[in-house]
Length: 251
Image 1 (spheres, rainbow, N blue to C red):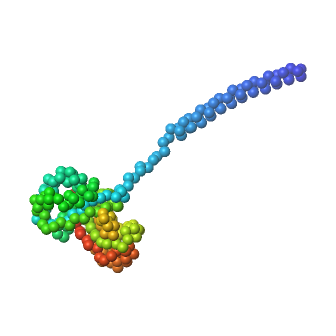
Image 2: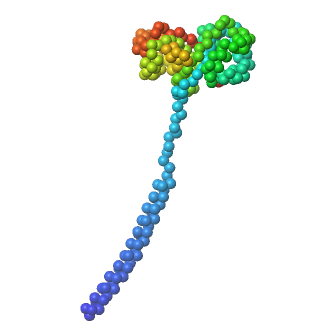
Image 3: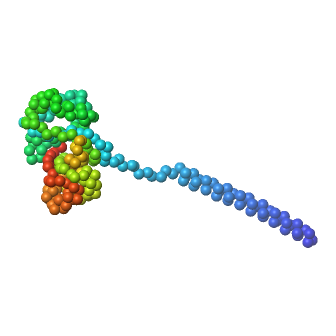
């Protein structure tokens, strides 16, 4: 009797173990499937990336020739200038910016990029250029500067009003450090630096171009004691010569 009961209990235990084992196996399989699906989704997910901003600042030195002169008629001069583009290209000269005086519209500024400074200097003295200027109605002798621009901001801005300042400094590196450290000061006073450099043969003679965002603030800043202090700190000698103009074409 006892032996029969023992055998019956053993069979029941074996059956229960079998059923539990089957159920447990199904649960593990489902869990494994869910984990695999989650892992696959994570692998396929792509992390968002931010676009890389393109800098508008150019610090590669650029040789240029900057010419200012007076013309009888701007439209006539501009047409003549465009007609002689092939002559400039033949001498490694590329049009860059044309400006027109804000106070005296007969005053014109022409900035061109040059491939070879020696060749550009020879071109500036050539009879061909003199004849072309006469045809365009240029009055008097032009002012020609050969410069190396070491910093430019090529970003597009809303204003076409510019200020070109020319001045002498005691030491180029000292002035550059001082100027670079006060960029925000100029912005706060209605000016944004656009380019600066120095004469090709003398880095004590500086040329600085700025965009005028707020004319009232800019004029007040130019005559302020604060700017005088900053000039002294940068080693500027004397007062700068300033030409205010509108950019009428940029190539």
